[in-house]
Amino acid sequence: MFDNLTEKFERAFKVLKGQGQITEINVAETLKEVRRALLDADVNFKTAKEFTNTVKEKALGRDVLTAVSPGQLMTKILHEELVNLMGGEEVELKYQGNPGIILMSGLQGSGKTTFSGKLANFLKNKKGKNPLLVACDVYRPAAIDQLHVLGEQLGVEVYSNKEEKNPVKIAEAAIQHAKSKGFNVVIVDTAGRLAIDEQMMNEIADVKNAIKPTETLFVVDSMTGQDAVNTAKAFNDRIDFDGVVLTKLDGDTRGGAALTIKTVVDKPIKFVGTGEKMEALDVFYPKRMADRILGMGDVVSLVERAQEQFDEEEARKLQKKIQKNQFDFNDFLGQLQQIKKMGNVKDLMGMIPGMGKALKGVEIEDDAFKHIEAIILSMSPLERENPAVIDGSRKKRIAKGSGTNIQEVNKLLKQFQDTRKMMKMMSNKKNMMSMMKQMK
Ligand code: GDP
Image (cartoon, rainbow, N blue to C red; front, side, top):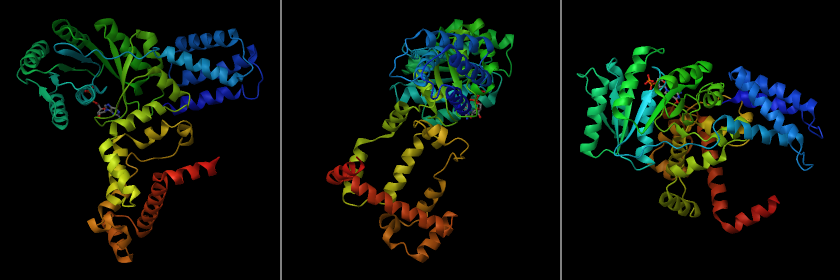
């Protein structure tokens, strides 16, 4: 995410390296690079110019403390201004109501249906709500089916009516249905077109007027750069939405949309989509996004994701096993699966400060643990519980079964032994203390 922008900002700061003081000249030079980085990220010219002007005023107007280097000071100002550019404080989605009604808008292919599913999942599992999904695309039966598939996968009911050709009627009937069946949030997915057209806008505006949503969201593909911003403007002028959802931020997006939308439409970004899976949804926090853009990582989000997957009871059991040196391949597999649930590996690594840069250009498969999993799954129950029995012929069988080779099996066995040793050591407080002492 935003790798290029991060790298270019770093290059811009090089100008200040070793400089003892902020001066008009070195600020101008740095900001020239910053502006170039923003333009390359597809931020529009006006926004980029205003942004660098503000940063300049702040940098030159501030008493330079001797304790901070010009580089640090500039990073701080740039961080503050990036946060401002993206809207300052986060703005929560409004979903309370009887029922709360959330209306989707956006072009076809922007990720509306996928996001509707993700949002239902989020409200159900994280906010304890009982959502109803509504398919209002009267033109593409496939879109209705797509929502049904998602609903089934998530265990969320989907309301649709392929006979009815008036989206307003479908939406109204769905809300009645929700009221009578006790659903407390209704998520209405509407039809999109490949490009902005009058009929689509009218249709969404009609649905909006009829059902008076608690929140209208505009969903947009971040990969489309400035087009995303232009589309946002057109939709906002017509239907005055409440918040933006930026999808496909996991792709090779340059970041322009995330940085510009707030300035252009004055509506906050509320969520970002970071993958095709139903869990790949993040609440948008301007501060955390600025951290990531400046290569500071996003430890807070990383810890939050870990906590979501964390089951205390399981953790306690695991700790006991570790202490008794009984940690086996079943546990190892369980841990891998938990990490996988946290998201795409490269994305996770990018949240660790400094890692984004280190990983630049490194190919990490989405399913980096595929081979390890295959090897463990090819082991018999006895082998998983007691890896010591794995001899040469067993190794051969496991390699064949998993479509890997003996070297890979050996490597995993070695890794497993090392992990086990390390875990044993760390679980013992005394050892831990002596390890810490050694590190001092
Ligand atoms: P709609 O026409 O607006 O309803 O768009 P869809 O929900 O059908 O999404 C279009 C395509 O984008 C599908 O292939 C989705 O899987 C994909 N997609 C949606 N959101 C994301 C995302 O956050 N990341 C990635 N990589 N793909 C996404």
